[in-house]
Image 1: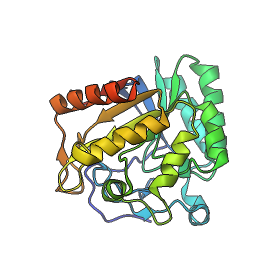
Image 2 (image 1 turned 120 degrees about the vertical axis):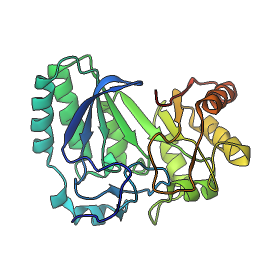
Image 3 (image 1 turned 180 degrees about the vertical axis):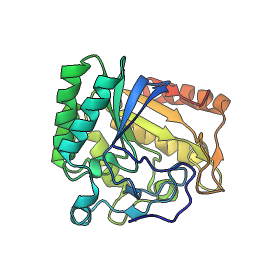
Image 4 (image 1 turned 60 degrees about the vertical axis):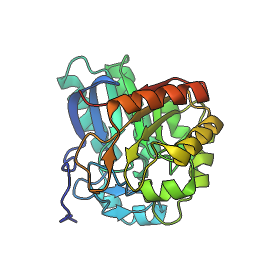
Length: 265
């Protein structure tokens, strides 16, 4: 399957990409567990730099029907090992890529294998997961987080209306269930993209409800940033760095956990 949709950035075409130098993680490798010819996600976020979601689902049966489109556990392990041995000084291995990584049919097995490789080749490197938290209702996904050093889990809203406007979830995904899943992860790292425009979470009642929801989750840390690529929805407005810094200070004071703002440059 090939998508004819125009994208702000092209999809990843390999399992392992990078290394890139990240402000958060240093010299890091990305691991794309998803198909390379279309975007598969349980969200269709207004700000996603990979553009519109081609296949929007969280249903295991829908994903199983597409299993041939995913790299196998063995393929992932072999490619990652080859790239790890090629590059020196890798500081992080990140599950990210063309959608929601935990939708891979065998994500727990993948997490175990990547953890094993890391321990053998680069024991000081950290393993990070960028996830939108929609699969945390599955016990096997929560159990797989034991193989992840940095579970970075999305929370873009503090209420169902803002959640629907910004993240545009697949049918069957409910805001209350996402929050419930986040509360079941001990001391997660919460990541939030703040945007302005017709759909905003960067001020007013929407921001207040986000703070209140964060307090119930009790994260170990919060990371906020805004769009730094062209986005598919032209109504989305970027939150500038000076406002991000201010919002981080407000949030840190309110929730009692470290809140770090990130921006390009």
